[in-house]
Each structure stands twice: as C-alpha cells, then as structure tokens.
Length: 446
Image (cartoon, rainbow, N blue to C red; front, top):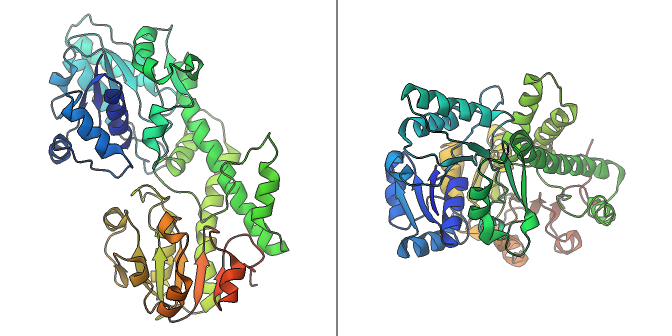
C-alpha cells in the first residue's frame, strides 16, 4: 500500500519507518529542507533506539522516501497520515494550526480520495475540523472528491517507540460509519496477525479522547505517588514499600507507581493541560486534573528545595547534575524536571555542571546559555570538585557508580537521588550525606 506521512517529528518518523518495515511504500513529507536532506542520507534528526537503523534499511529496500513536496507524495496514496505537532498554546490548549494547515493543503492538492488519518494528538472534535478544512478546500476547487477522515492516536513511549509500534498492545481507530475500515485493516494487518482484537475500531470522538484520557490517567498516578512520597517523609514511612503493597493489588497494578522529581516530556504535561482546557471549553471543570498539574509543579519545586535545605546557602556552591532528559532512552527535554532544578540552583547562586549521554544538545537549545551553567562529556568529570551530585534521569550508566571514585571527586560527599536508585545504607556507610524521595533516609527539615 502507498502511504503518505505528513510530518517527520517523533510520531511521524516512527510511524512511517515502521509501516515501511512491514512492506508498505511510504513517503514522508516535511517542510524543513535540512531535515529532509538529513533523512534522505539515512540520518535520524531525533534520538530513538533502533530508529536510524530501520530508516537506512528501508531506504536501501526502496520502501521509504523523504520529500518536501506534498503534492507529489499524495499521488496514488491510499492513506495520508497527519503527524505534525500540536504544541501547547499560551492558554494551555492545543495549537491546531499545523494540523489544519496540512488538512487545507490536502484538500487543495489531492487528486485521489486517500483516507486522511489524524495521528497527531488532538482534542475531541478536531477530526471534524480537519474534515471541514478539507471539504472547504475541495469546494474552492469545485472538486467532487470525497476524502474521509479517521482518528488514530499514537501510544508510543519514547525510548521504546519501535517496539511499541511493531508490537502494539492496542491500536485505536475512530471512524464515521466505518468509512475507511478496509484501508485501516490493510494498513495494520501485519501488526495484529497474532491477535486481531488488538485493533479497536470505534467512533471518532471516543478515539480522540482515548489518547488524552490515557496520558492523563498515567500522569495522575505519577502525581499521586509523588504526593504520597512527601507524606512518607513527614511520617517516616517508605514510599518503596508503599508502592510494592499498592502494586500487588490487581485493581491497581505495578506500573507508574514510582516516586520521582515530577513528570515531563512531550506528552503528559501538554496533554493534561489540553484536556483541562477541553473540559473548560465544553463547560466541564476537571478538578482532578487541575490538581494533578499543580501537584507536578509542586514536586519539581519540592526536590529543588531539598538541595537548598541541606546547604542553607547555595552561593558559590558547585552542583553536578546527572541527567537532563525527562527519562532515559531519549534526548527529549521538554518539561523535564532538570530545567526546574537547574534554574533553582542558578537562581540561588550555585554553579552547575550537567551531564547526559544524549540530551545535552537539545537541552542547550531549549534552556539556552546561562552564566554558571556548563556541560561535561563524562559523568565523573562533571562531579570533579562539586559540592554535591544530583541524579535526575535514571540512565543505565548512573545506576552503579564507582562510589570510591565519586567520593574522591566530590569536594563534599553529598548525593541527592531523585530517582531512588541507590541504597542508602551503602552510601551512608561510606560517609555520604544521602537524600532521596519518600524514604526514611530523606527527613523533611522544618
């Protein structure tokens, strides 16, 4: 099947590459000429394990190509995915301008009735707007083409996106009167051969809401556990034991129950805010999600202030930060807790040396240059002469440090473990001051 993907960001590039991997002929379209040239050369503009290898393999087999020309890409396409960004607007709602601009272009340029599939994360009712935009453009051309629109939200975890797409736990598609059902089934048949029930075909609005609902639920679990971790510190309980006890209840499950410095990334913060705004638009105040969002901001501030509480005055202190990405396996730094922590440290008069195996370049672009902030290419080099090391992202290379080397490198033996990765008895036994989140060895000082 010939498929067009509009947008070569995270979602579009993974979608196009994986569809090509199972034999579809895919053309990916992007307005960024430099990005297209890079992709034509087999280089991925984003870090995602395995993605670049898949891109090169499918270029070599002639199953994927990249262009800036949407009109050519649409020729003879059976389906066209819209996979452009929906960034958070100033009021927190999703900015649909890119999605609707693509819809307009499809209406202006299409010569055949390809099924338009909205892969971008969008609020309820967006597919109606896409349909209207396409129809308006067709009407201006006096065209009689009928171009149906489907909703098909993505459920990709950064750092594991290839596996998520190739081995999905579910594929959700929203259609109107089942129009386009045969096309959808043909596209996704290779991914559900073992279990066709993984393909859920529902109505369009329910499909759109499923994506936001899923991310909002996961964000809620994270914020709840972070709030519980703060209570644990007050009462002397251990959040790790609480997590194990809660997670053993099959009604709750074990996933997304880890305390940490707050959620970040391209999805959870943006989608929670967009769902809140969607509720407001339709006259429904989503009280739980408002609290989830506030709790997440509180958690980022809470862990930042742990450092201040210990030192009292951060003026002149040098703090090493291990991890900039919002999670391991990605270079994504959007809404990452490291931004809040580093800003707090700099504003408090400290200097910061940061290390991350993948995300330094993207962090510099997002955070900008600041006096007192520098970066190191080596994790141990970053802590040389520092008053403390702060673990923010649980990359594998940080999981089992050489503590003798750490002790010899630091000017003060202080560790802030904001991912609860380390054993407190081991570090305290080696003479470190150690603080984590929600465990008895992290006492809240009043």
